[in-house]
Image 1 (cartoon, one colour):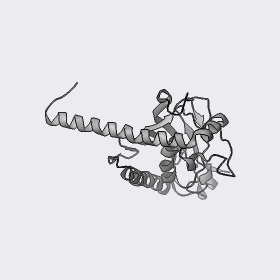
Image 2 (cartoon, one colour):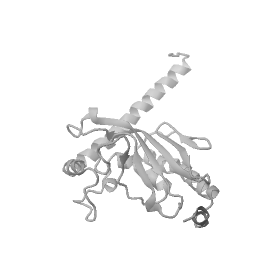
Image 3 (cartoon, helix red, strand yellow):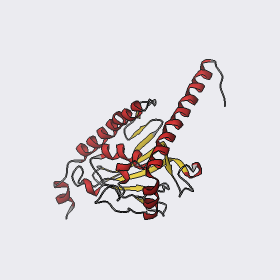
Image 4 (cartoon, helix red, strand yellow):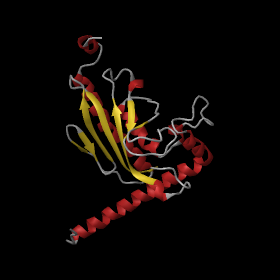
Length: 226
């Protein structure tokens, strides 16, 4: 198909970009509800033309198509516990990583063809639906909506929430993913894994909040550490 024929069947770049950028902004509004439910503080994002960030999330646009439509969005999730390697046991803290870097590749036909959205992982993650090897890993993720939905679900994908992993012993049409060994381990310890990562997320954020309060008190007292 020629370039002009392709572009005739898609939304103009300006409309696509506005839609995606609006959804990224809305993501911060939506994810805040999870923090409120768990009594965890959430700081408002800083927003520039192609970047959105706060303490826990850093989102930036990396690549564009030839007509300047957004092609790749990088998504760095911070302060969310996930297994960076195969753990010795569920509560193996040495296997836990708190930073996860995803690349979201968006088809030029967006917002059509949502199933063509491709998600890659640039950091290690021991997870049933992530390929076990490679510097850039494939992610087996069912896209259930547009970019805002993807951004909302990936933190809970990292923390292995049941409906994001979809183990085949519960979800009849599901499979063992890209890492069957991790899936079998997950099935054996599912409830403990979910509880551990959730409690770790809350306790880790409480520590961060207390540290911020300490820094704030030091600033008021004019104590500065260099």
